[in-house]
Length: 395
Image (cartoon, rainbow, N blue to C red; front, top):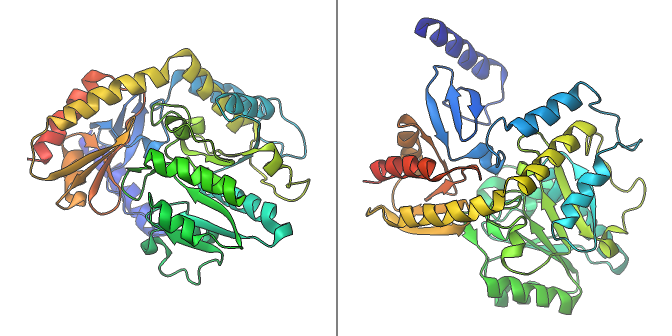
């Protein structure tokens, strides 16, 4: 049996090398998932504290989501937005009712698309007054399209793709004075992640978000929150901004919205969204019946299974257990909910490899941070398993 599995693995690796652009460098071949666990091609089981990069917040192959996808796939997959479908408006209603007062939705296929849509919306809103500049944060990450790359505040992602799309200004995160000084007569919006993900799991300081909202109100600017990674319950509240009590004018979601099925969303206040008329923005696949059916099933599970309560309870336990690890390699532990960063003073890549060998999947955030993004359904036993492995690799 092992020879058969090795042959299959070798065939997959050969095909990866021969037919795919080498934009990733994966080592494991994952073939199955269930709940908080995945299995590789050899049958080895891993506790998954990556969740597809905060995508499978309900764990892998959640039965309710699987049922919704299977049933809808046999009924109707796609018709385009030239016609109404029976799920899209009710998915929008459910999202708005989660706490985005006076909002309207636009659906797309990914986080980068959602952020691109938010940027287009902001520029369209500012067009009559000639305002187009958007201020974003250093160490931010907003996507891989040319425009969202230009918005991204980490230079390494932009290298090789110059020139940047004009109209973006990057300032330090959590620095309200520098942010205020960056606003000029051409500024239309301020865009940020309430908790930076790729940049190192860095939460916004409450006073910074509060004063940013005040600055936007004072200068008639739009406030855009990118919750592609930190939204959908990841931080213990459904929207991450609800931790702070500061509502944006535009919000973007994706990743966990359909627990792995591709979908993104832009939610904007009605007075802002109204600048987009028929034909001004579009997405062929966006909000198709299959994606929306999957997303509605995810929201139903959130409501029925107390996902947010479990996230908060397990987050408290996980932070406590992490603080008990005594290691000279740990510099700081930070984050919110089940979006956690462990700042270390050693090579992160090596630690991630060691954890995988012991059966735990974790990922980096920047060059010196271990990022933990477990499914929101994990229990204390899962935490204990992870802590045991983390303690070993951080000796």
